[in-house]
Image (tube, rainbow over all chains, first blue to last red):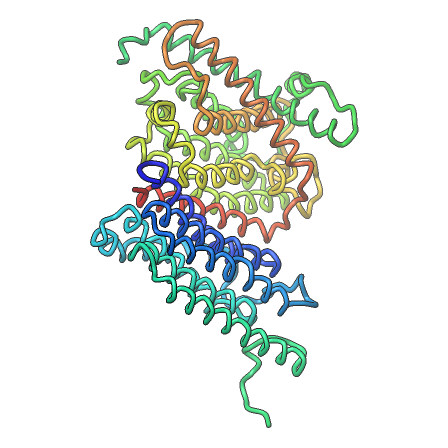
Length: 219
Length: 320
């Protein structure tokens, strides 16, 4: 895979990762947010597949399979399990309202673009020129992390940040070693499991999942 | 290149576009109503009903509120006037470069917005509660819709290195790959959301309701009657047709006349009528399936369109 089809396929997949990150800010119901995260994992896997086909690197395609299975399927399933009895849960009181956070994400995207062009120029490849988009996805993930109150949405934020880091890694190095990507993906999976257990414990103990209410220690 | 377009052809095309929009706008509204009625299992009024309504309204006595000033009377004229200017100078049927110096996409967008601002001022002028409410709502929506529109126009003009409508259309005819790039797709979504908002269609505004809690556009034109109302109705239907025309020209440009001559222009005419009818019917069918958004959710939708347009611009800038 090379030339124009490679370039447009890669641009489309990388663009899909960023659009999914923005969609998390846009959507309010948890079910659709989890769907957006799942789509982002699959788009990230597609980026790796396109790069793997371009570089004729079977290890990269195996990495892509791990990414799609863990980030596209397993983690969203776990998140759905955590929400379990409340599939219609919404972020009712985000710290920043939806229109403002969308405008802020536009600003964040421009900052990412302005600050990381040097890296893009340094890398020099077609994939390298898309690095600003990866940084934008990462920063939008951070914004989700700091602007949401509910733990499940914060977990989603962590996933977005992690997907952004993976995307930048794919674009800059043209292929993370298989073992490293496997380790990172499983780490994230473990983090989601731990956070999920914590969230379920919080809900059974306190009946609600607002971290801002946890101000003092209990026995 | 403009020498290959005789002045007479350009003038004839211009007149043809104006006639097409004046007659076609109300017909498009009639078609969209018909599609909606059919999908809801009703017979619906005939397609030319909006034209008959315009004739009926134009004959009625012109009633104006007692304390209304010239702003109130000028608003419908500005609305129709700006739309007619666009119809005359925008390259809707052809990519003739003779239109290029006037067919700047930014100029077209701002002429369109001038009409909505004039209408909002006219609504404020009467100092009625509904007029003010409608104007404030329309401007709230417009204030977020405008940057989105502007940025998606910017994203479209980056690959063509020009904001001239003919240059953009010719560019995407010669490079069909432009139409499938992320910036095009993102700009398309943003553009469609803005068109829906600016023309006051579902899910942003319901054109067929006069419920005071929800109406936006209808609240603004509540005080107009007779010939004034006919002008407003004509202006809004022409705006809708014009925006769908622009959408068709920018995103599905095939069929537009690229060379002078009656045959080419005739083909362009048939193509644009067919495209606008299909897009309008599609929009009407979409409207059947959605519910109106709560007014507080509309800025979220518009901010989403804005971010999509930003993404379109960014991806146009970084695309390899």
